[in-house]
Length: 508
Image (cartoon, rainbow, N blue to C red; front, side, top):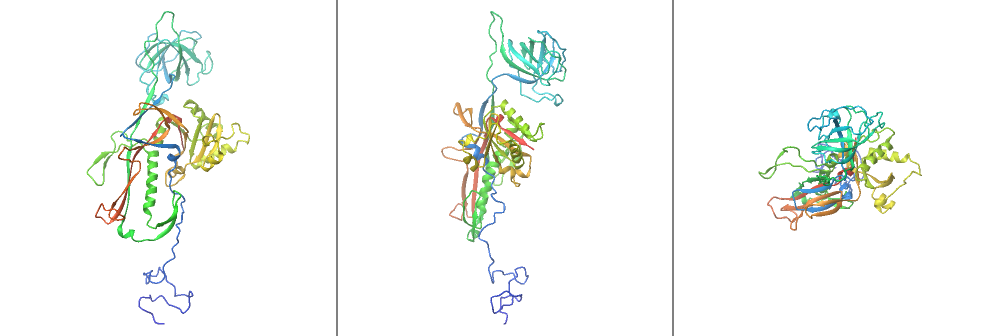
C-alpha cells in the first residue's frame, strides 16, 4: 500500500482493526506532531480531586455573625473588673512618710504585732529581671480607709502565718502608683525579691467621720478596629470563551455538574472567599508609620494600616497556652485543668468550642480515652439542643470537665499544608459560645452580640460585604473595547473580637 500525503512515514496502515508494531500513533515521535490528524485522545470527563476539598473557609461562618457598618472605624467598650486587685506590687519600706518616687525594693523583718507601716509601689512596667510585666496602671485607686489583704506571690514562709501568709491592713495614704498600709495583723519576713498581690475587701471609719473624698468609678476598656479593602479579579479573552470543553466537577461548596474546562473563574472565587476569612484570622495592625503602597492603575499612594485579626486579638487581650501536654507535671489532663483554672479567672463561660489542629485534637482524644465509661461529668451537647446527632453531623464531639462543656472539632485551616498547617506554630483555639453584652457607641445602649462578628461596610445605596461586577466586551459586558471578560471582586470588612479574655490560643 502506498503512503498517502499527510500520513507520517512512521505510520503503517493494516487491513484489519488490530494493533501491530508501526500502525499506532506515537505522540512523542518527532515526525508526528499533528495529533489531531488521526485519533483524538481519550479525555476523562471527570476531574481527579486529588486534594479533596481545598477551601479552608468555614470557621467564621460557624462562630460569628456579619453586621453592616458605615464607618472607617469601629469602637466598642468592655467592662472591667468589679473589684480592685493589683499584682506585682513592690514593697519599698516601713517609713512613716510614704515615698512618692523610686522603686527600689526593700526588706522587712517578721513581726507578730499589728500596726506595722508598709509602703508599696504598683509598677506600670519593671525590668524583665524582676519578672514583672506592664499592667497599664497609671494610678492606684485604693482610698484611705479601705481595708486590704496582701500576699507575697512567691508564697513566703515565716514564723507569722506560715506559707504565703496574708497580711491584712487599712490604707492610710495613696499617691499615684504608691500606697501605704498599716497592718492589722502580724507580717512575715519580706525580702527584696518578693512581689505582692493586693486586694481591697472593705473599709473602716471612726465614729463621726465623713465619707471618702474620692469616688470609685467602674473601670472599662475601649478598643478599636478598622476595616480593610480587599480586592481580586479574574479575566479571560474572548477567543478562549468560545473554546468549549466540558468536564464534570464537584465544587468545594458541594455543588456538582458540568463546567467549561476553562473553570479558573470558579476556583478564583473560592480562593477569594478563603482570603476573606484568612484576612480576618491573620490580620495585624501596622506598627509605627506603616508601609507606603503604590497602586497599579492610579497615582494614589497610601500607607497600609492593617486590621486586627483573630490571632492578634487573642495574643494581645486573651490567653495564650504554649506546648500543651508538656507545661504542667501530671500529664495532659493536668494541662487541661490549668486551662480551666484560667477560664475561672475570666468570664467562666460554661460552653466553649475547640477548633484544633491534628496533633492537639489527637492529644485530647487520648486524654478522653484514658477516662473510664463512668467518667465524672459525662458528655454534653447542650449548645446543639443536647442532640448528639446534630453535633456529630456538624463535626463536633462534646464532653464535660468540671463545670465546663466543650465541643471539639478539627479546624482544616490548621491542618491544610498549603495554609497555616504548613507553619505548625498554632495548634488550636478555644472560642466561647454565646453572646457578650457591650455598649454600642452608635446606638447609645448595651446590646448583645456574638463574641466574634465581622463588620462590613454598607449603606442604603452601597453594600461592600462581597461585591462583584463584570467589565470588558465579552459575555454580555460592553464597558470596554478590550476583547476580554474581567470579573472584579471587592470587600471592605474587619473582625471584632469582644471579650477576648475568654478565648485561648494554643501554640506549639
